[in-house]
Length: 241
Ligand SMILES: CC(C)(COP(=O)(O)OP(=O)(O)OC[C@H]1O[C@@H](n2cnc3c(N)ncnc32)[C@H](O)[C@@H]1OP(=O)(O)O)[C@@H](O)C(=O)NCCC(=O)NCCS
Image (cartoon, rainbow, N blue to C red; front, top):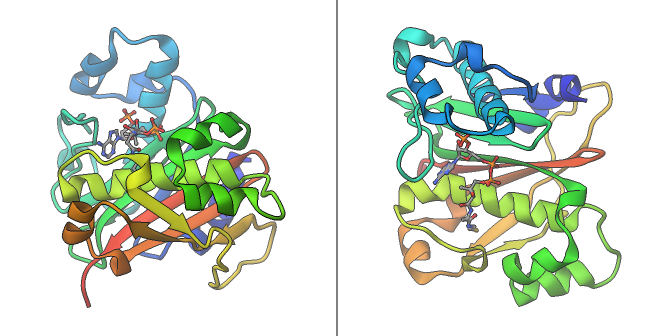
């Protein structure tokens, strides 16, 4: 399944966003000494997700024309867990226990920040909703036809929103500080031939006043792809026109 992402990624992301996805495996041999030091005492599973996420990120950076000399020490973790990207780059990493994905783009183009998240659909059960969903989101999910992937999508989008906006806002914000709307809003873009996942373009409302004062809701864009067993979300924050 991981191979198929590369068949439709140009539908999912714009041409100036570079995406790489790989099956999680041991890629610790490709880490820099500094990157390796950060996870040397972690369990094997964590070493695999960390090293595969970084392998994806470096592959995406390579597609953008950047190489090792642009991140000599590696893609190190900041104190809050976010990645230290090369200068003038923004990006994001996500992993499940089986897939890792990274997106990057040049700062100075259309984007000020990116957040990506991948989740397994069956991992997000009903109880999770109590912690992550606003009353309105729960009502929307529970009314009418139940979406097989609704809860996982909500969770994934909120994680992507956090990864995208946290660096700009500078503070932690919680799951109920944002509200996702129009989960099944149609996403229209050129569609390539071959098997496609379902694509949607939900919207977001910032409920936390200080967050809404800092971030222009209209400049946030959400992309959602529904795969057989996973959901993938990408949130981008755009430069003002
Ligand atoms: C940070 C967080 C979003 C990561 O999501 P996750 O589902 O646990 O894990 P994922 O595999 O999708 O992503 C992990 C990657 O996110 C990135 N990341 C971690 N902290 C980050 C941050 N503060 N900002 C941006 N990216 C971050 C890292 O690259 C990390 O991978 P790595 O440690 O291998 O480098 C999550 O752990 C968290 O703290 N959530 C609470 C806050 C929140 O989501 N609020 C919702 C607001 S609507």
